[in-house]
Length: 129
Image (cartoon, rainbow, N blue to C red; front, top):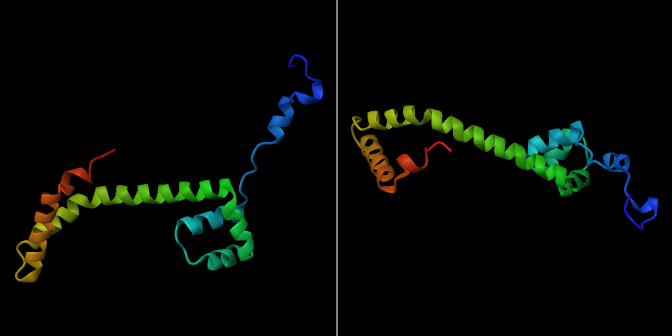
């Protein structure tokens, strides 16, 4: 209890637990996934989860919904980056293989390799975090 304060001014620990931020429901989670994945327009997302566009607009104003969209977007980008890292060796081998192709394709492969070496992207972009 705080000195000099009436007991009704001091927050009760039970009250603090009751005021936890609510979780997103199943439709909000589905909508967050669709928004993060860039699946259709917002009107299409709202229709897919069975809500009005105004409801989806309200959800988008909620910090918890926004954070979930951001989290899912980060997860998706991280997965794409990991896939690119895993595929880099195969892509580089294919590019080198393209050097032996006659005509314009061989020239394009050579130019791509030279551009990447010049820009330093062969090392800088594929470093593991």
